[in-house]
Length: 173
Length: 173
DNA sequence: GTATTGCTCCAAAAATTACTGAAAGTTTTG
DNA sequence: CAAAACTTTCAGTAATTTTTGGAGCAATAC
Figure 1 (tube, rainbow over the protein chains, first blue to last red):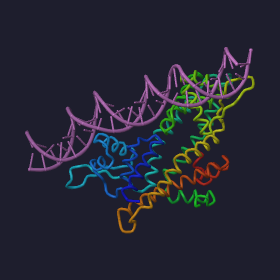
Figure 2: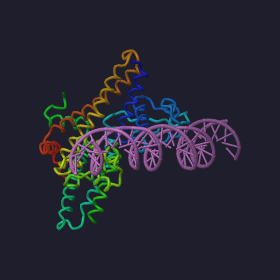
Figure 3: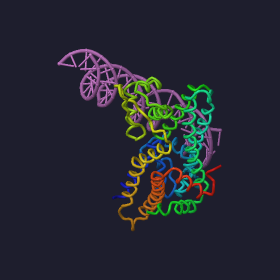
Figure 4: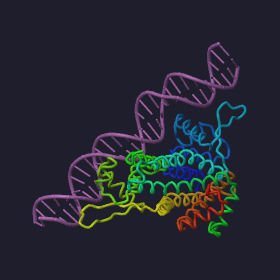
């Protein structure tokens, strides 16, 4: 396969993956493009390579900066901004986890806590059943959240080595 | 809070969470409604409670069945179908993991494997850099996939107890 | 058999989400 | 300071996704 073809295929695949997980397809594609660019790119380069407008490029680059996945760079003797994506994939994953915990897991945990404060809990069996369902969801979402918190604070090799020991070498296969 | 208000709040929150994770909002709402309904519901009940059309209810109930989260039930003396959602949240989580691995993780792993078969790997430094980026993604996505495979095959209490020990009681807090 | 009830499919419509292009804003240059 | 280079914003438009409602189908009742 030609390099350009492979790059394009990768960018498309990363775009689809993002899209399936609720991330704007173009944002994921811009991220993919920057991930495979050893040097930082200008907005014009991003626009040209992905065939998108200036406004679109700007919007998605800003979103990537908000997510902590991309930084703006200033090259001396250059007036334009350049954009650089963090290349260490463990750091990228940690950053994604940080944001998704903040944006989605925490809010849903808060709602689950709110709705279990329902009236007539002890007299209404329907209310009791509802709270039990909510509680079991809260437990599992809370455990997932705690696990991700550990991942976010962990050194990569410690994290995977510990997982590896824990699960009896299953991660290796 | 009134029970009906709490139920509605929960259904809305679950719909938003789904939507943020690339799941049709209505599908997530239907699932939420069934999760808090101890008994199975008819399509008409789902339609009425969520204010959606018959076609929409039918489509999303079918999607939930495809995901393995809901089963169709036939009540004797009843002509209509009834729908029941699995209530054991660990089983629900496992089923979601199974489907997402199959639908999204596996395909992306396959693409990552394809694109590293790029030409001129040894002569073109650009190709080499590309393949290195792809490899590091493949490693981490592959590890996540393996971890989820373990979760899917694990007994809930074994799984969390092992995690718990592993991470030095951090999951407890 | 026909009538009735309920389910499924799908084309059209509605709603939502994403994108564009140009005007306004900002920073740098000379 | 004005001009040039570049970035940001956003109203309008386009594309995509979701929903509807009814026609056709299937199963049961009579």
